[in-house]
Image (cartoon, rainbow, N blue to C red):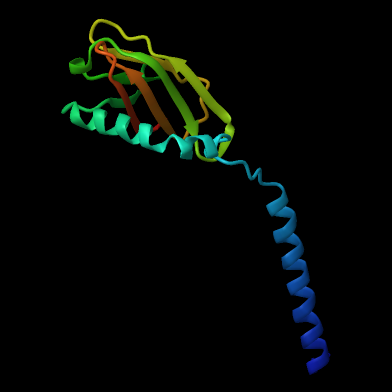
Amino acid sequence: MKLNWGIGIALFYSAFVVTMLIVVFRSRAHDPVMVSKNYYELDLNYQAHLEKKQHAAALGTPLVARYDVGKGAFLLLFPQKAGKPTGKVKCFRAATTRDDRWFDIQTDEQGIMEIPAADFVPGRWHLEADWQGADGTSYFHELVVVR
């Protein structure tokens, strides 16, 4: 069978339409949620958030986080200079808000907090620690840990 211009153009447009339909159906399967649902409120309070980050940077020793495979947990080492921390840690993945989790900060004598992560989806996790030190100063530090 000999191909002429008409058949070639029809095949090209048919392939284009099929490709577009595949792209549309695959894009509809993706959940387009925002990383944070209250992004407008966060933007309004950005100056206070920035001051918390500056306080955390001024500590000298930063908040350290790692994933301990043996324990199946995220370990957060809070700076001793700030004193006993109180506050919350948010664990989230940028892919979806369904996996977001909040934990109250509870440390041992060495300032280590253990977050059980056995039921966390493997991948890249963002940890945001928002805490107050013993003197009432507010701190904020964000880290990325791979489980």
